[in-house]
Amino acid sequence: MVGGKVLYHAAQLSHARRFALARRAEGLDAYVVPDKTPRPARATRMNPLTGQPYNRPGRGRDCGKPTA
Image 1 (tube, rainbow, N blue to C red):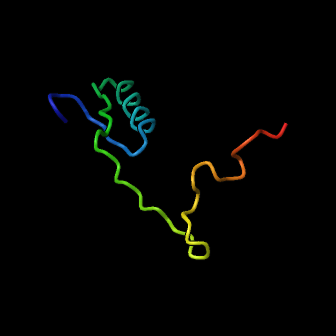
Image 2: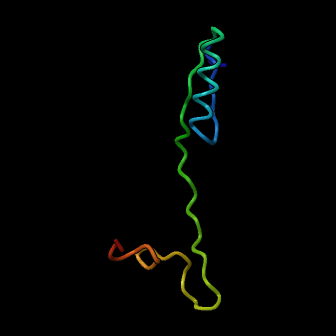
Image 3: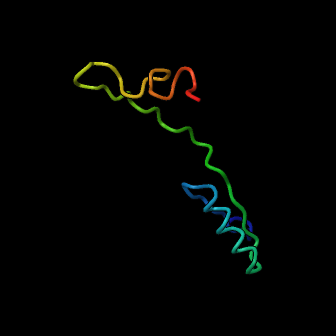
């Protein structure tokens, strides 16, 4: 609680907004502060059979010309 206001922080921003709306309906001054910390970089997963990374962009079944 900061200055009479209730702060919410959640992994899902929509969940935090829902909680804040519920607190406002109860008459409490609540608001959501989005998390500004950068997400850690994910390590590339390598396929042990091919030596290539999984899910290479532009190399999947859904890439290329659309099949109508």
